[in-house]
Amino acid sequence: MSVSNDVIADIAGYAAMSCYGVVGMAEQLQGAESVRLLAGQRLRKGVLVSNTEEGLAVDLHVVLESGVNMKSVCENLSSAVAFTLQEIAEIDPAKLKVVIHIDALKNLG
Image 1 (cartoon, rainbow, N blue to C red):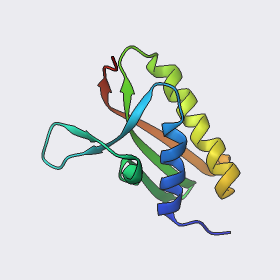
Image 2: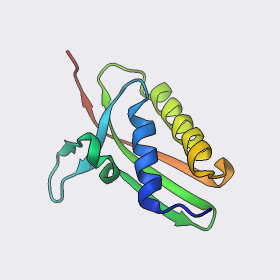
Image 3: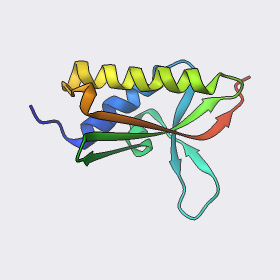
């Protein structure tokens, strides 16, 4: 089975959004010091999927809720994305590298 990188990005984006502490996916604005929080239909722009010699690399650009334990949120996020990609797209987790970029923190409340 072959799955396009765009579909993988969509799956990874939706898996990321289901994780506690993740406010949204982020898009780096060119030439700016700021990021934009992406709407649900545009999650793919916050995910970069690339093929490497070792397998597949998925870079997630996320906005986290202020005050959360970033390390545990990132660990949960990484395992949730790997699990979801394995279940839906049949991607071998041993050939998957998930890299998380925290682009911003946001206060909710």
